[in-house]
Image 1 (tube, one colour):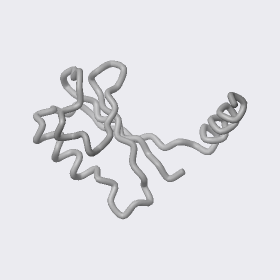
Image 2 (cartoon, helix red, strand yellow):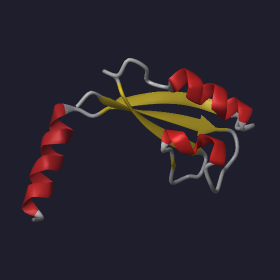
Image 3 (cartoon, one colour):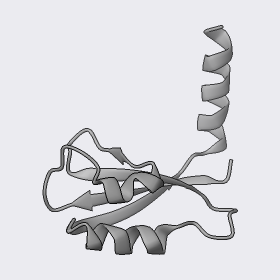
Image 4 (tube, one colour):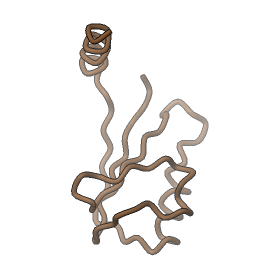
Length: 86
């Protein structure tokens, strides 16, 4: 718990994450026009400011930003599902 997902919607599709962004463990969205960054809200630094600067430096143009936090209900359902698959 304490994790959030930042989704960065891009103006153009991408097929791979630029090497300069590997340190963020980003995932490309299904539409290939967004990237997802998961971070710990309890950490001293979330890395968002550096990520946004590095996105700019990689010539990725942003369309929109949104964050999502996993609810306790989603965590519970995930735990129950994982335990039932063992």
